[in-house]
Amino acid sequence: MTTPTVVPLILCGGAGTRLWPLSREAAPKPFMQLPDGDTLLAKTVARAVALPRTGPLLTVTNRDYYFATKDVYAALPGGAPADAAFLLEPFGRGTAAAVALGALWAETHVGADVPLLVLAADHLIRDQQGFAAGVDRAAALARSGQLVTFGINPTLPETGFGYIECGAPLDAGTPPALAVARFIEKPPRGDAERYVVAGNYVWNSGMFCFTPRTILAALALHAPAVLDGARAAWRLLASAPRNAMLEIDPATFASVPDISLDYAVMEKAAGVAVVRAGFDWSDVGSWQAVSNLVPTDDAGNSGQGERVSIDTRGTYIHAEDRVVAAVGVEDLVIVDTADAVLVAHRSQLQRVKEVVGELKARGHDAYRLHKTVARPWGAYTVLQEGPGFKIKRLEVKPGGKLSLQLHHRRSEHWVVVAGIAHVTRGDDTFDIRPNESTYLPIETRHRLENRGSEPLIVIEVACGDYIGEDDIVRFDDQYGRVPG
Image (cartoon, rainbow, N blue to C red; front, side, top):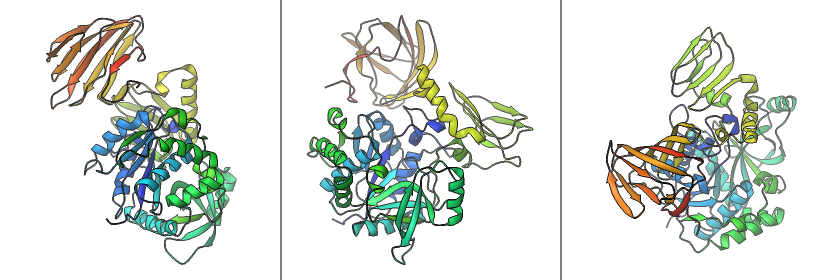
């Protein structure tokens, strides 16, 4: 068997709060659709598997994102990678824990000396050739026992990124590889301006390359508590097959310190190398970055969807379900979704995350959920709700099946619009077709299933004194949502 050049490790998570209302906690930035219709996660996976002689693809993500991640992989032009494996976190513990577990997985299933290429799922890189050259350079350094990070040549004095001060060149190779003099947190603007002028500073991309042997040794030296906790979690998973979906034990994982890899290891370790990448890069971390992805008109306006701009300059409009018109405004970002609208001045876009904080403090679901919510079996969209009722549109994928469940405080009516629904209601099972319906009383076990080859569309009307999504008791579920 040919030894792989690198093993891609994709870290898929993060809230993307500066990209609200398109990015929500339950559907964060990696799954957000870009202006070209693709997602950052899909682009990251395609970029990784296009590298020559890559090893098996490992993704570390939250348990709640597993099915959405699988759907993204399945929709890739060549289909999902056949050797994809998943480590599912019950909750976030920072990149140090994720990388430690990824390194233990790679050590077990691929080998301790094959470079691990750590990629965030929410970066945009268009130059595949330049990316491959940078990875090749980093992998060679990693095989020699070095911890390697990737630095991006700054194009402007960005205060939202960390920086790396570059030291002496390590050799005469290309792209340049240099010793890391120091890591710098997000700087004030004056410092950022000096870094751009100085020329020996790069943006810290958050991408890494090292062998499992090297990073595990560094964790043992600089962050032993992280490594000890990760090893305890890994011992419960190590006997599973290589391409399995592995769920990390919550009780064990809770003991792992919540810390980034930069803080835990990279800023402390000696002899860290930085590859000064020659490729383009964006973390698409704000609406300014999103607006830069689409061309502007003569007045500097841009956007997506049905929009009208009159006597308007420098304004980005994202319109989803209706026409959005801007008259006599300048330098705004307007994002219109089914359940929320953002209007912000371009100079204030870093503060969008404050909106998410305010919604969270109020207990408003708009910080967490879209009006259309993805589920393993498909998706539902809330069409209307009020005191004592909620109306949803359910779309069940072919082969999709809701859990066998009941509700204590609400009844439901299902009306089939398209497809054939196979229904369990109490002890009965039956099919209902378009323009037919069924009634599900309170405290009645029920299930909806699509056994056909086309999507099943159902309108659900729920009535009761409480219609929250947490009024569900599950008895059986093919997606593992019933506690063991």
